[in-house]
Image 1 (cartoon, rainbow, N blue to C red):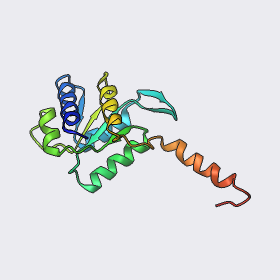
Image 2 (image 1 turned 90 degrees about the vertical axis):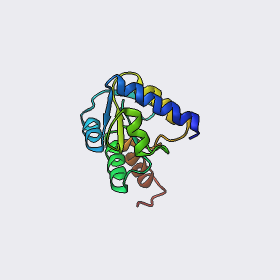
Image 3 (image 1 turned 180 degrees about the vertical axis):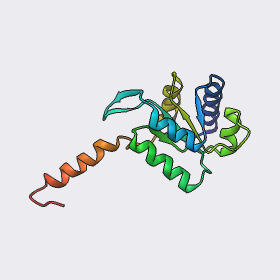
Image 4 (image 1 turned 135 degrees about the vertical axis):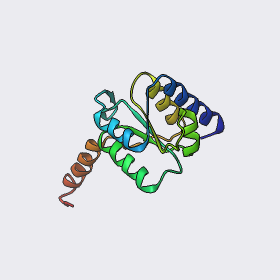
Length: 146
């Protein structure tokens, strides 16, 4: 992700924070992912309408926990090269922020578009479909199962 895209991402997060459409902090973001009921259709079926951004210097356990949560609830998740300090400054938080979630308005659409251009969105976010396809391939082989 180049500097111009990084500035644009942080600017969008700042606008969303001023509009009170941002959830900050890992636990609050995870709760919002679980509670969010807005869904949109994509090429693999249905997915959650939100976007989660994890700081690049967040702890391994926090990043893994949020990625697993996003994968289970079919929410787009990205970990761009943005530090906790930069994230907290963008959203106007006094403490370091390890994760930011966007779930309402058109902000998730804009952020998702920006992250897809930079190839930072996780490709396999549809948790339920990917396992079914793998199982079908294993069973429908040339008689060889698992």
